[in-house]
Image (cartoon, rainbow, N blue to C red; front, side):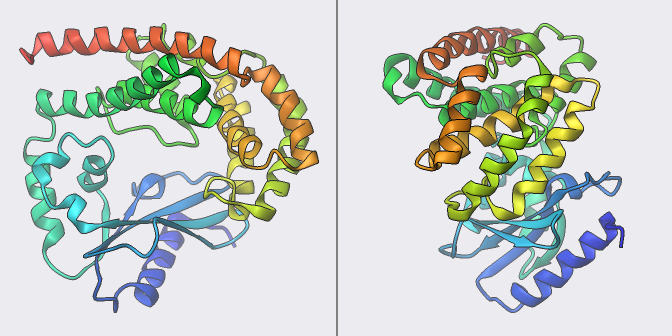
Length: 330
């Protein structure tokens, strides 16, 4: 049977009916993420993001629920209190966009209508746009500063979080944040549309030393074996049994795209999790050492990349400063 968006929406409603509608602690459940748009085009494998708001302590932060080998639910649990001040949400790079246009599946009160109404009223004011940009810039700068002053703290996983925030700072000047899996692909699409092409090589140089997509193709077998090995004792929601096909299909599709270098992002950040969390595995350790050297994930290489990240952030900060000046924002 071919999976369509309508089928995934129906399955979402069924899940919410069974698990959350009778739970008095659940204030609301929303469909968010890539499946939310009515015109969404599904990848060969994708996740269905559900945001569950609790009126108290949450039972867990995340949960993955398998639908099939290609599809799964990604449940995010948060306290409703984080969404209690919609005016503050206007400058929250993640939560603000989450409430901008989610699909409401369930709620116990009129929380959503009020929150979204207040949020949207001044969401696109220049001051709030700059606020969302600074939300990500400050996170990226904070990590950059830590690595600059405490080089012993740099590692691939934490460093790539800084890169992700740095890319999303630019995104929020114009739109919602990028998705994790297609981060570099979406970044490329946006900056070329806006004729800011110089940002592409600047950001890519922060990710990988190699600029040869064939490197990924030649190491996909090792990547898949290492990913599968890591899922035997997974400790994160990134490297999880339900996510092997999810990432594999994304890497392969991006290799075939107009910008095949974008595949380096999911390839690199999954390796960062695999290599760091499961280095005691002989299979993983051998493959990780090889990949780490070619991409540039050893400490000296990461510190050089951190300098390149500084240059990228300075460029974005210049753009933000100019936009702020144009709108008279101090």
